[in-house]
Image (cartoon, rainbow, N blue to C red; front, side, top):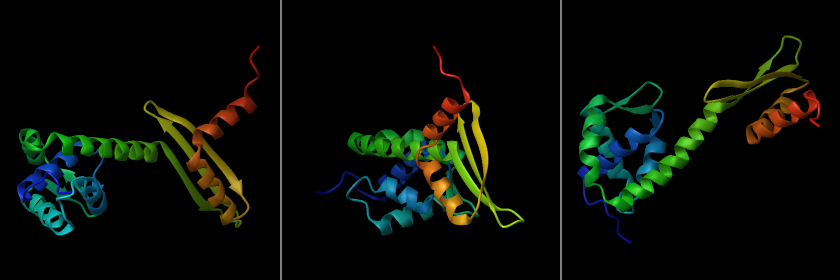
Length: 174
């Protein structure tokens, strides 16, 4: 089934539309995935259009390989977004919503592992929300494998751990 995007100018409009709505600077692969919401777009046209948008200063590319929208890009995106087919914008918005939800989750749930001088490890688990820190827990672990396993479980269900800690610490209510 052919897509709705007809030419490279529309691909650029779509990339700008995406860049204006992604919550953080994004790597090449993410912008590619979000742009491929239309069947008419191929990798080579996308790559060329993305490079053109950086060259024309609609986007910036930082040393970490992350793309960001410039003020010029923001202005042009606002002007041109209505020329994108509605169905493409809808698909894009759904994909962006999912991506932005993942970004928020990554910002809110963090774990790290650090080796101690005595050969054991510290696993740190952090949970935040829009207002700030909810939990910051450091635990000693006997080895790296144990620390990694604990960090993985925390990443999967931090709210569950938080709730269990509260149940253990707080008396039961009548």
